[in-house]
Image (cartoon, rainbow, N blue to C red; front, side, top):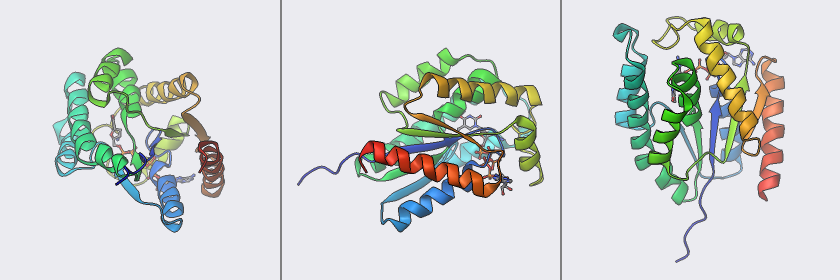
Length: 214
Ligand code: Z5A
């Protein structure tokens, strides 16, 4: 029996309130409508253990946590996610759409917390080997816009309690990564109205799929 072709791994990134979840749902619907096998997941999380770790990471009652602890907990959840969901699903030929992945660690822990990109890259290399997202959609919004949208939902989680400078560093890190790897990254202006953002996402998606020969 022939092996299924490896699936595709697509991630959505951006600071809080950038519109990742909203736009991911839109693409999921397109893939489902086309009859494609789709797995929708998120980080931190995506497995039973990962969701428990997410609860700890975002719990405002925990308060301060050493940046190293935060990074290692995130990668612990990621190791489980890779083993239980991402790798097996890609091997079976599924489209794996993930709300945040390792770019968020470069942005939030590497830049936001100031741990630097080398430590993140070391863990990335150890746990992921050669595995990287095939496409990273970065929804880019000014920090004030993102925080306003996110905070309109109510209670802040532990990371949302950070100051504006933290999110500015995270935003800059995302944009820098997109500049470094233009073949796999796309930046979308997420500050536009919902319909304009969706149109931009779909256009990028269609162009990318064409370039992939789909
Ligand atoms: N984290 C980390 O530090 N390191 C890591 O490696 C990873 C994660 C993987 C949880 O992530 C936290 O984990 C996150 C980073 C950290 N920090 N925090 N806090 P998350 O993705 O679950 O949490 P989030 O970024 O806070 O999600 P979010 O605020 O829901 O953002 P979003 O998914 O980009 O936005 P949304 O849910 O699609 O939209 C937010 C609201 O804006 C909603 O009411 C929408 O209706 C509205 N919206 C969306 N688009 C628009 C437009 N275009 N116009 C107007 N309103 C809009």
